[in-house]
Length: 60
Image (cartoon, rainbow, N blue to C red; front, side, top):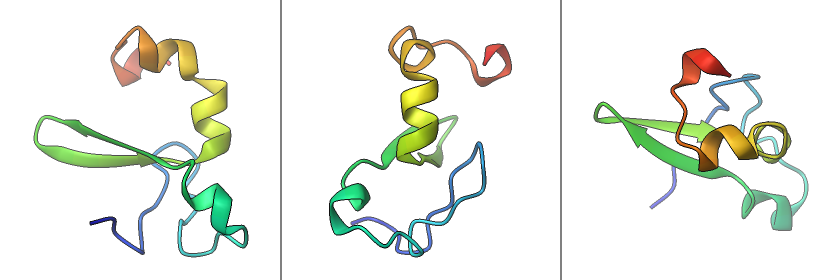
């Protein structure tokens, strides 16, 4: 179901390079305009309010 080669759309960190198996569960997948986007745990933490408010990416 999840792509092993997912890359964070903010910082370009790769999901396959994640050493901690629990951190793999913290990655967030979103769909915008039919495209799947991934965010790493650090970027999710930094932008959690923007994500919850559903602000467009250009406002981040």
